[in-house]
Image (cartoon, rainbow, N blue to C red):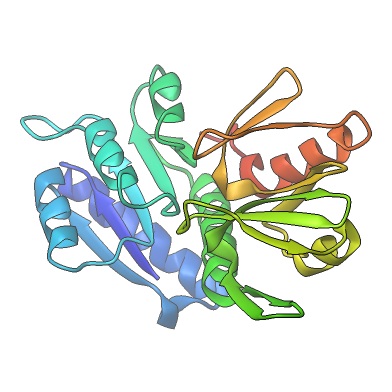
Length: 245
């Protein structure tokens, strides 16, 4: 997993690298982690253009005489919906802007060992799911094999299922029951929010007034029966520990 750090303060970068390496040693992931540090946001984007894979991105919001962290995040989001983006800041007034790029965390300087560890635990769990899990649908006329990260949501009406994926304009359509789909979409990245819908938590962009807005604009209802369990699963997967900035 490639972890990208971008901050104009070289001393801070060295400190953050050390904290990440210590976490990797403690968690047993040292051999699976590569850290790339940049003091220039434009250099980081240039490295990405030339093939550097971003698996997690830690961005200083304010970088003098460079693209700021929010601008970098918006550019990354144009082509990558999955990469976790963590903003590093000395201030607390940027949360609203971060919503628009689906920021995973805000870490306020000075960063504590506890806050970076919680953040990295979550990033590692999401990365592992997205790079190891897939769904196999055994249908009468075909077999569909889909990575978990490609599925946005499933809608089941009667025995007709519509499976919306990130790489197709029209959903997959086939005859299967909700029990079958619920069984197949058993990864913790999926949550049932309504008797007819199961959603991928990574593609949720807004929850309000009993409605979920997905990344491509689809609005999905949250059923009263499912609300408590759904919100609990969402918080555990996505928001756990977010207050520790």
